[in-house]
Each structure stands twice: as C-alpha cells, then as structure tokens.
Length: 59
Image 1 (spheres, rainbow, N blue to C red):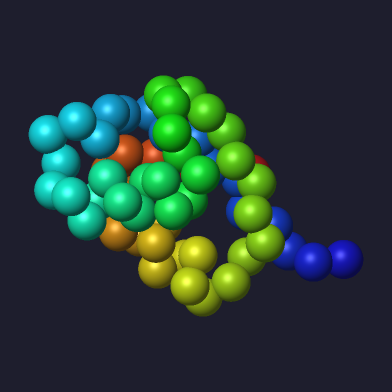
Image 2 (image 1 turned 90 degrees about the vertical axis):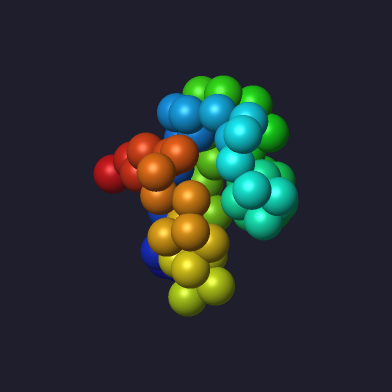
C-alpha cells in the first residue's frame, strides 16, 4: 500500500507572497480547514515544507 500524507489548512494565505498562495492551490487547499490526502512524494514534502506555518499535518 502506498504511503499517504493528510494535511489541513489552519491559517489563511491572505497577505502571504504570491508563491505561497500558489503552493496552497497546488496542494489543493482552497479553503480554510479543508483536509487533503495525497500520495507521499519528495515533491509533495517540499511543498508542505514551504507552507508549514499555514497547515497542520494529520497522522
């Protein structure tokens, strides 16, 4: 079975640089408290690291 990562947006991207907002959209986070599950890849981990102050990782 593939490893997955679940994360939720807990802070708004308003006021953040354009690159941060684009990363949130790329992750599929378009609204507050939206939870997304994705396949764990190095590219995904890099995107999550970039917006770590706006999201919460689930177990």
